[in-house]
Length: 206
Image (cartoon, rainbow, N blue to C red; front, side, top):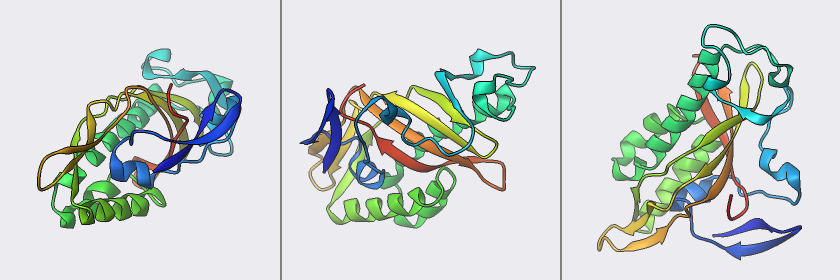
């Protein structure tokens, strides 16, 4: 699918390898121009941590007290956010290989609306075309913004060992990029679990 990407200081439309066929069709490929692009999925409220935040950035026994992080969150909570993000990719890259009856249950464990419905629609369309996913995506997430119920993550993924195959022939139809920039918004549900509610492909390399 044509994705709007940034090239230098200007914007243009190009065709690029898909991340994973139905996933790329489901995420919001909305990109503008300028340095703010990489934080375009950040939710209102809270503030940006320019260097990103990882569980290693603070003691495991003390809450994150940096004013750049908005409300105080224990390092264990940021670890849960990152674990939820990684689990999302583990689930979505194998979903097309499972029975359709299991899709909603599996995806609802790692995604929330509106992304959940977009993912389900993408799976249905890909299956109709006789395609199935293969391979894995290596993620390198960083938390850049957080409040009590939302978190924004940026990622430079290696999707070069993933893509889509023709179900009947096993012939590869697409392959991902080794440097795929991606951002996501996670929301914490009533059950305390973090799920992706929005995803964006950012540009054509990172």
